[in-house]
Image (cartoon, rainbow, N blue to C red; front, side):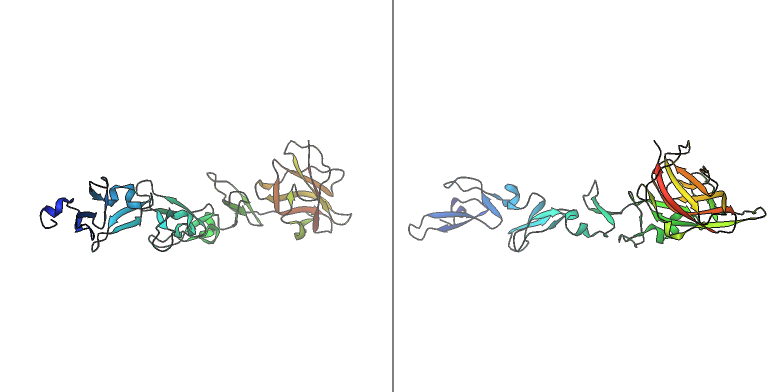
Length: 290
């Protein structure tokens, strides 16, 4: 019977005979499944039924030689299964999608292919399609002025440009532009500098104390000259966020200087013009006026 009209079997079925009864047995060929009943065998492409048993994020196709089902993860997915079990996982969840450790892995809206984008504070120094994320401060000083130090914001990792000692910021279109400070000292005065131990101090964070009320901000920084015979004539402080601050309040005497910032900040450096023999001053305490 199998030699006549394939024994009445579906064209995608193999016709054979039962070993005991010799009746016709129809069996779907490799790559096909029965969508009919036990008695009426209807063979359809296995990929049309439950995606051929493949993962929902896989494409079902057929082997060119055997016609067996082949499951291939779609673009943007990788096989995280074992052996012959194909399990397709978002590529970004496996080794960051192959992206640099300082890159964010996402997907192209059209193709779903992996897209590697350098995180804030990093720039791509790779070639072609290879994304290599390097600290922005290591590339052209992060875009900062040549007389500025490039650092990163502690919260966002964005670039922060701070003028180096001896330079002051004259903003140009929102950018930090550092020009050299030229100071002609009055007779009897000299430059004094903050004890380097206190560079990097924070408010809040450093030793707290009391401070006078100031319209210049709520966060106070109390500086005191070493020795007893030197007074502060003017002061210049550089903060991470506030930048250069020169306004001060002097109480209870001119060997003290209170400088204020609008928000909590980090002190990067400070210098002063003083009258007297001492050339160093300390950060005594920080405070917050209410």
